Image (cartoon, rainbow, N blue to C red):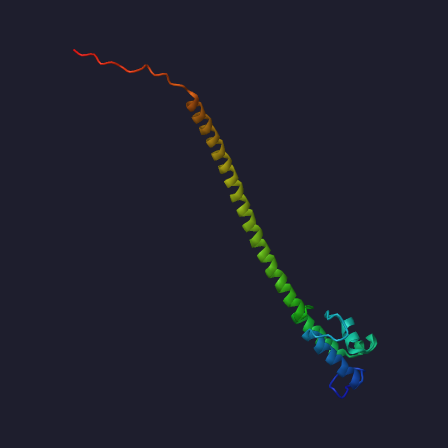
Length: 146
């Protein structure tokens, strides 16, 4: 049996049109009555028909299955979300690597600063020991003449 809108099966023209409109909304990522996931349950709920009515619309289900097989169950919004998540993961990986590199530089700088501090303390101690050493002079020296 073929209905007036070109659908095969035992569904009314009104149900066939509702299913096609629901399919178009779901595939475009603009659901009105469901969460927008590309499932057959959402198809019949979005069309506001029964599951049995949807199951009788074999040509619409064939189109649905063909689209899902070709494009997957990802809506345009989900695809955009997945792309955004992938981009953010790449950025996070890059920032994590940058932080690791900077942390290594910071640790190396801390070691160098500690070594310089130790050297400065040793030099200060040596200088202070020299400053406390008293040099006793022998007084004025006389020249002998020949």
